[in-house]
Image (cartoon, rainbow, N blue to C red; front, side):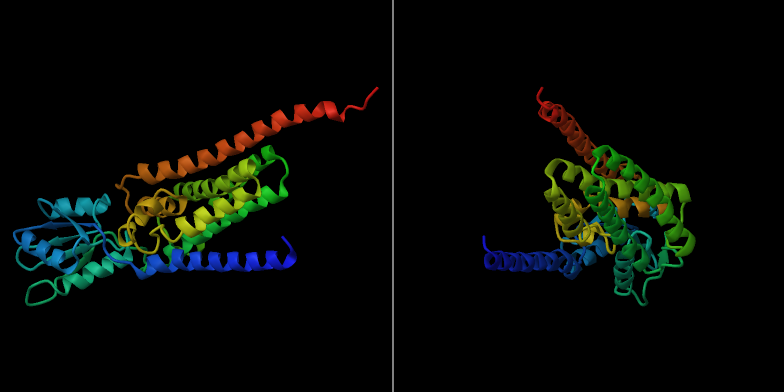
Length: 321
């Protein structure tokens, strides 16, 4: 391939990557809408309100009828639902802005349209942090965690020749990155509540999962592994993480797929740990641990391959007698 052909091919490839990035980032944001979004309804008018919701957003809500207000609040605090509508007398709406400010806004808007002489009162059961009431700071926090993980993986791959030394670098990055990032997020920006060490451990695990994936893929595939890791985390993982909205607001099945990647799992685990003490965290924690383990396993494969290669080359290095 001559210079002219190479230039043409690279220009077309760059245009294709640009188009792919526009689709990956703009499409989910432009198609945000409820898709089987779980909410609870209780009271004598539950069926009528459920019909209102279904008529307004066909297929938009996973409506769960519960026994009473206490059960509805428990479901919100366990992250089983994003909110609840209480009927009987004057309707009331319960929201959880900490789970998703966008969903909370949508449910608050629906409260204005419930049948009745006046708008239904809205109560925020699990509120977002007072320093980040709209959740914009939280949403903006996830991308830097992913980007720094990618940067760490790329730097270790390009600048550290020894695969064993890269493993040590990953450990140092995960520990130091977790502690430093949460000292900024909690100590300076004051974006997240929760125990510092617990949040720092999650941040460190995210760093290990992302950087470990890049380092592991590069150890097995070479430079192509860097590109594969970056494309997976940035073009799929980040836009479909639901960090700025909710997985149930994204086009199907991409919201579910996003939760199986480190950015989506990180957003869910950080939210649950920081704001919902009773919410189960096994799912997103398992996802992050699996990605971190897979990255380290790939790195181990690369180390084992190097060990087999060195003895094979050793006889060639011995000068003839």
